[in-house]
Image (cartoon, rainbow, N blue to C red; front, side, top):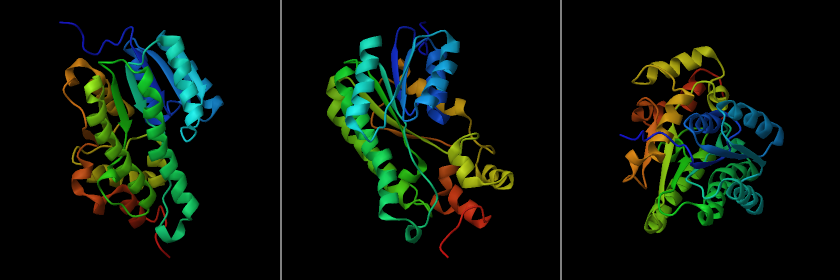
Length: 273
């Protein structure tokens, strides 16, 4: 039987692919044989990530682009298409977040997160459509539990991620006839990521988070990357419009026991004064 996770000859584009979960996904596809293009705001971080990705011996392309700028992300996608041909897998993972109570957040701060997470995702997907393999392309958005669990200090992220996943569902319906599948992954607390570092603040809070997770540990970059490989594989060929948690069961507790709530209890991040 052909290995469903062999992506040799396939083309993968990862928006936000210079660090964290997105770079972990890019590494997994490169290790599985794919040609990988990444885009992110910082050219320095893009160059560093490309150097890491080339260790797998695959073709790699990096471009600096802000997902909030449609023309910029469209140019990055066009460059990837010119270099590698049609895009088989599109990962949209650029995101912005910070813990803040609604009364401690400016309108502009709220807008920044919505613009990166929601508008940015739309820009990536809309600009990519013309370059996607039809039929057969897989789009994977990196969402978050804030999409379906309300969390204190996260009004901006909750709004943005909920909107992102509704866009995902609509495009799964509209682009299904083209043979394009559209899904979202909602990672829980993932060790070694900027998000966990910002929300936890200390090893004690991280240990508290792990104790609240049914599987008893924080997630890893590989946990998310392997789910992305599955969603892009033939084994997921009948899955579209799905929001899949990758969180060890953490979100089963609901928003009341979110990472931000635990961090507030521990004094790692401020609540309303």
